[in-house]
Structures are given as C-alpha cells and as structure tokens.
Image (cartoon, rainbow, N blue to C red):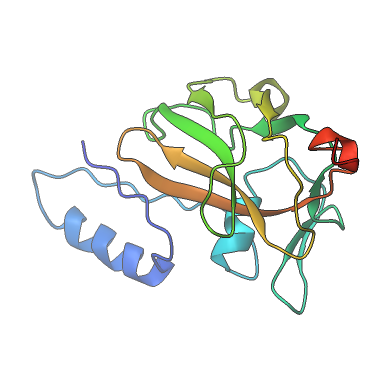
Length: 177
C-alpha cells in the first residue's frame, strides 16, 4: 500500500496521478481529498491543528487564534492541543516532541512528548493537554518566540506557531535580588 499525503499537492495533479494509476491492472487506486484552510498559507495551516474557533492572519503575517496570538503569562503553562485526524488505514500514528524556542532558536521550555495514536472519530476525544515549564528569566516582548513540534521519526519540524512571552514575574520577580 502506498499513501501520498502532500502539502500543496494540487487536486488536478492528484486526479491525474489517480487516473494514471487506474490504468495499471495491478493497481487499485482511490482518491480522497481533505478540507484545508483558506488562504492556503503554511503558517495558517499549521495553526489549524490547534483547537480554535477562528483563525486569521494580520497584515504583518501573524496568525491569530480566536482573535489573539497565544500569550504565555506564567513560567508553567498547560496548553490544550487536538490530534487533527484519527489514526486509520491512511493516517498513521506518530510521535512528536514539542517545546518553545526564541527567535535565536534557543530552547526556552521543557520538552513534551506526544504519541498521536488516537483512533476515535469524535474530535473531543482527541484533545490532549501538555504542561510546559519555562526558563526562569526575563523575556523581551519585542522578540519573537515560537511553539515548535518535531516529528520524532525523522526529526523534522512540523509546526511553528508564534507566541508572546508576557511573564511579569520571572528572574527574582524583577527585583534583581
């Protein structure tokens, strides 16, 4: 069995491949499409994997989830995620490591692991919570920070999501003691 899952694989191209595969007597081909997000913008598509009601892109290309960039306000943060599709014959289970980084690629949080192996078709049953602990230091609100996820099988980054670090009390509560 061969499954092709491709980002930016145009439907017309997929349909052409499907027709060519059907011409082969030894091949049984099926073609399925998945709904994507519009506009078809990678950062927006990756953000669509997070639980949300609405997604939007600002003029400076920030992705807003439910009208706001995710804001981290504490050195310990619990965040909810959703496994976007149930595991099936087409969608295989995989493992991810998630953590936060600065714009300089400095790791600023603990690493969390998630095994995406839920088979339940009910999306509510595929929601999970991860707890991150951040480095106890001052964070510059003018700098960029990201939540990143890596597929553990091939160590490829599969998600990069903008966050704002707005921690009022860190690094000795700002008193320089």
